[in-house]
Length: 274
Image 1 (cartoon, one colour):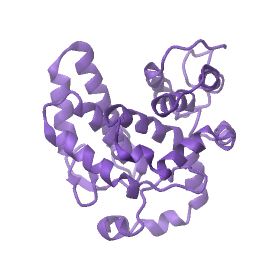
Image 2: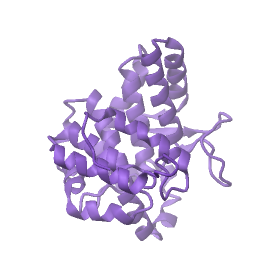
Image 3: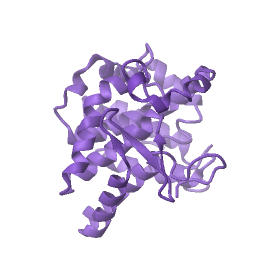
Image 4: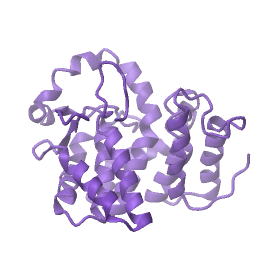
């Protein structure tokens, strides 16, 4: 149960389950206990996977099978969680579905000219013919292009972090060499992006680019200590409340924002200045 908002599912699309599966896998490894792993496998496989579209269905907490999740980062993170699970699971079905998703990624990923990742799945042909259930909501979203672009900026590093997790499992996948994907990395390095996240409510107050950007850069390229220090220091300056001693500064959800500190555990060591 990941949210209680009138008119919205309680599973938070695929995202709530992705975070839970990620945590269960980590718990199984840390405690050397198979019970969290078995639960993660069960929850993952409860989500129906459409092989033709290479997408998962949302599953609400009462077991209701819902439609495809339209949000790109949700599907991407569920795949990333599945990738982490596949490394320790004996069930081939987990890895098979994630591999199908990876094969379809060039079509599912939609980017702006700058390399910024579009917030919604790409439903241009031939995907539009395949994902028929996506057609109805599209006109509503098209009315809010500016809002979606603004949101996409705050979620860009979140997407790139998930790509970094997948890279750890699928190191030699051809997707990483595609021009479209390399464009997302170019945007991550750009001064345009660096400035755009400064006043974006979906960035430092919620998605922590200060942890996510350097992780992605470490996963795909060589990042200098200076560049990494810039991002981590920025997260501390813009997100950390010295009064509350939590990453709650400017956040409407201080508990979630503070818990996102876990993302920094995958970074290599670095000295920071407060």
